[in-house]
Image 1 (cartoon, rainbow, N blue to C red):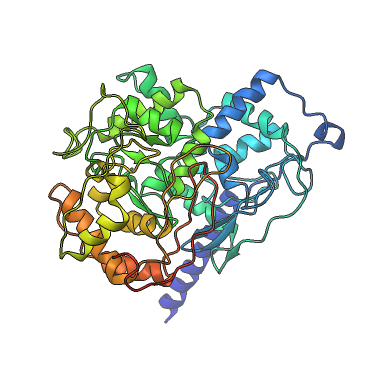
Image 2: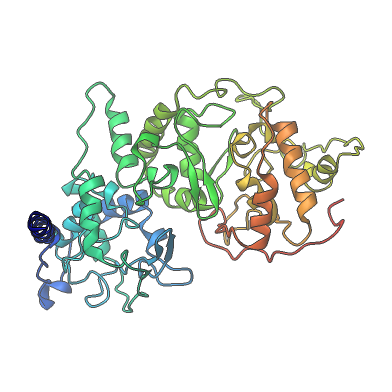
Length: 466
């Protein structure tokens, strides 16, 4: 008994010592606020601010730090996580509720270490695990840009996290396991463009944050980088060798897609990706091409993407179709429900030959049709691609109130069979349709300009699509 008591005492001491050691490691001091007379005098070189604005576009800062209908960069956007809801912060230069009292050193620490000015650990919903790779020079430009914005007063909602996830200090342990701080060294075996692209993709653009599955602790699974995952009710496709794109991406076509939000051989951006491409339209062509060069290098060797599928309309030198030259082919009668629905509701656009974004993509070219998940097609059929305000852009009607479960399942299974290039039928179509129709899966809907739009109300109608 005496030996057991001694063992328990030793264990207790070790726990106490370990707790003290972790606290010492996890504790971060606050950084003094800027004096009031300096907060209103943040003047920076116009060129530095312009550079920071472009970097902010690479990082989609406005997208995450602006709530629907809210002031730009004033925070309050709800980010749903498996651990609860986290609200983005106010990053305008308001001294009370924003970052107006932050020094450049405080901003650098937040980007590099994920710690705010007061010493609180930030959650990785703010992707500091990517932003840590940003150089001090680029952080300086970002800081100058943010400090030049219009201050907006107003606190953001408190995070809705249960115990123990509401204990910020525990994030120090998460960082010990998963955070690799500092800029990435150049790969001397690669070109300067490739290294520039890696710097942007792995850093500010944080592409892996959406395209990489996460482990039980919410960290990206390093062994499955860019292998695709579900996010915001959509499926972010693999952008590595598992890419399901039926036509191989090139650096030119991907750069075009990133900057314009569509490519004639791959279709239009939708869902969260529309928000990304809307932000990237403000980025230089050189940087877009560098990002595309790096991403395409990750996709090299993707099975089935070397050649276009049979029947696909791909002619780089052919003149684009116009409304005067469009012809809609006659559709043969069929007893197949999916085929009948497609003929009545889809073929007029998708069989027209008119190029995206104003014509429906030839579905033999659609990554969604060749993907491992039909979720994106379910979303598009139900909610479509809403019209953008004040600019010409792709649009697709949603059929949420005009198609029932059976017809939707039949349509999606038909599309996979007829346009999927021999891919096996999806096994979970009906369940995904049920989940989406019931509201269990609630995809966020964006128009091509990256603005969140309320989805059409869900409902059913018998026979409306036949």
